[in-house]
Length: 118
Image 1 (cartoon, rainbow, N blue to C red):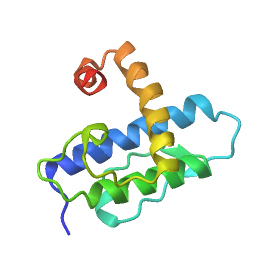
Image 2 (image 1 turned 90 degrees about the horizontal axis):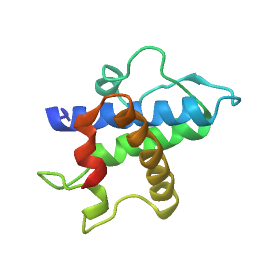
Image 3 (image 1 turned 30 degrees about the vertical axis):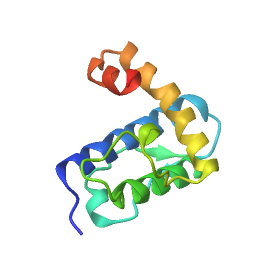
Image 4 (image 1 turned 90 degrees about the vertical axis):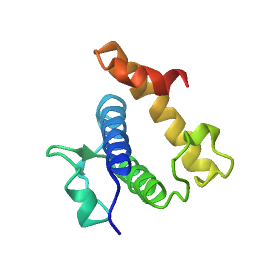
């Protein structure tokens, strides 16, 4: 199954958000290179994406859920009528988004401001 351009972009943003969150909040944890769930996603993961075990599981889970989203166009997850994330992962992803979104906006990524305010 080929990923659309939008799906690839969403997955790249998710990778970046989780990577920033892990780098800033799990500094002392053992990290290893992230191994993506598919070859197509492997091309989206940049070099140097080192994650702790919990962030690696969270990212793999998020990629699987994003790849299988049945909606076209995909709504923002927080406004979606059918929640596909389990409660535990939903809380973790919200925590990652709350940290990484403002972190990137403060460093010049104003294009992410739309998602932060939406």
